[in-house]
Length: 311
Image (cartoon, rainbow, N blue to C red; front, side, top):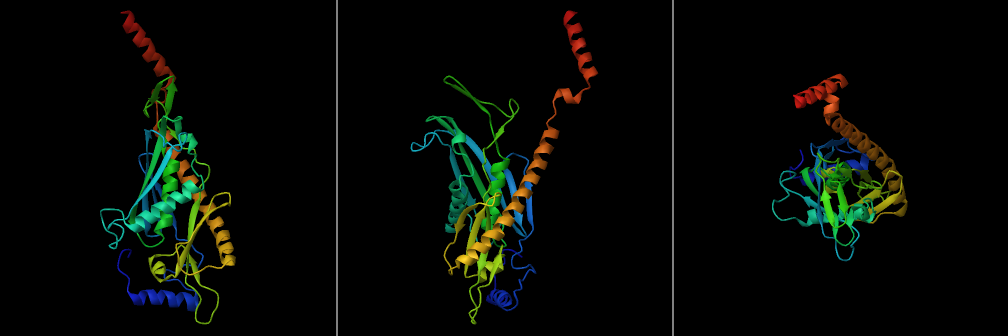
């Protein structure tokens, strides 16, 4: 169960099984990913992602603010991560921890560094008004690889979010409510999907290092280091993140990049299909009066109103 403190014997058992038999404690192959789950919320900009038992929730929101002086024609994009006791007893409530800050910075580098979201498209009036987009990520359950879950949830929330349509006429600016004009999506160029690998180093015999894809919590505790490879749906490498640990051979990085590209394409396809299904459901629910009545009924109502006015 996620969140239960790990015994040293558990960690040693997982490490011994990997090195001796290439066997993972949850029965997966070394390059196997846990089943991914996606769910969009009732409001636009809410997305929950699960990687096996690991779950993360992301909520995207926006407001109109003044632009930063150094970038007057670009909107703002901020990311925040909350790690609380609900996800694991090891997390504390209150002020953000160093781990939460590092995770938020990693997601920010992933999305902003790869220019996944068009910052200039968030500008309303240059030097005066821009959109400020904020993505809040919350860990719901930590059974390993929480960083990937949070980042994928953030991508889903950005895709699902809709901002109010804004009209500028002269010196006047008006933001229309959702019942006045249909909100518009953000301009998202591509989806940099993170895929994390855990490395366990060489055994005493000096053979090839052991590694796994999508490590669970037990494997993270036993690993000597991790490497996150970010690839978009076009197979383009968007970033590498290695927060310390044992060194990695370049040949192994190349192999991981190929595996990450295949996995990213699969995840993006799943995201797009779930998003299309959610948007289709919302369009079906958005009915106006012309869909509620038959054409003959509408004519009857119009004639009755005219007759009443003439009387």
